[in-house]
Length: 133
Image 1 (cartoon, one colour):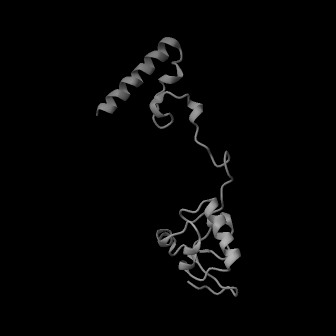
Image 2 (cartoon, one colour):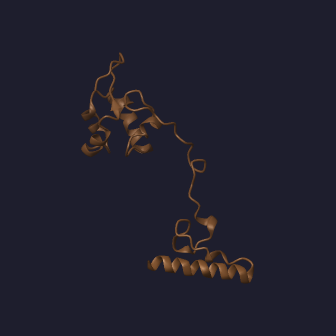
Image 3 (cartoon, helix red, strand yellow):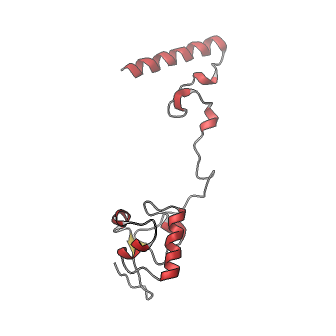
């Protein structure tokens, strides 16, 4: 209730300032979702969009064939960023195909909790292409 009263008072102040001066100063726009503490200019805290950083990745279909996936597809798994995706690819090239979920435990950065989260999200295929869950 107290927050509502404070925000109402601030809104009233903004309205009065706008009427008296034509346009209130930028810091009077107290929007907690756009600017923490209401003191930063509107454009200085713009959130990055997909076009600002990396192109949007296509959504893979689950389960992911871990022995055939590229880095972008692996990044769709929970907890996988560019570094871990590269580690998985390097381990796969060095040691060969993964046969089961515990084989992924040998990759640095993957532990039992990660493997629990990935259960059902990845599949393993041998060289012939037969599914081996």
